[in-house]
Length: 168
Image (cartoon, rainbow, N blue to C red; front, side, top):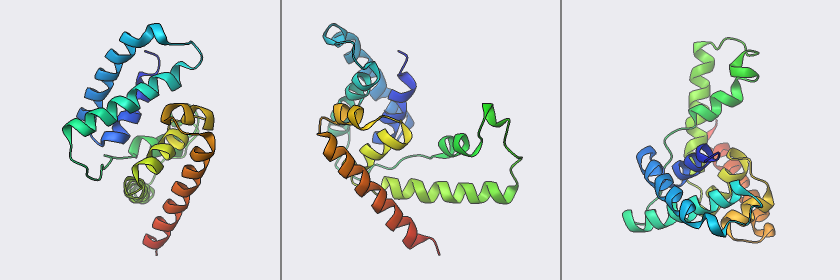
C-alpha cells in the first residue's frame, strides 16, 4: 500500500498509541483489501484514509471508554519542519538550547492538539499534518467542504487561544 505511512500517522493521531495504531492499520488494510473491488479509482489516498478513519473509530468504540485520546509526540514532524532540504542538509547545527526550546514547543503544541474535540483534531491533522485538501478531508470525514473549512478554522483558533494562554 503506497499510503501506509499516512494511514499509520492518522491512526496514531486518532488512537494516541503506536501499538493501537498498528492494530488499526492492520484491520484497515484487511478492510481495504476486501473492498478493493468497490474502489472507483479516483483518489486512493482519500479512500484509504477513510477506511482507516472508520476502522479507528470502530476500534476505539470497542476497546476504549469515551476518554480524551492523547498523542505520543510530534518530534518527528517538528524535526522535518525544522530541517529543510534533503535530510536537513541545508540546516544549521542545532544547539542544546534550540533543541530544548523545540521540544518544549512541540510538547505545548501536542497538548493543545490533543485537547481539541475529536472532529476539530481530526480535521486539523488531516489538513496540516497529512496535507489533504478540503475536498479530500470532506470525503474522508463524510462532511460537506464548508464544514471542513469551519472545523479547521475553529481548530486553529482554539490552538492559538490555548497556546496564547500558556506562553508567557
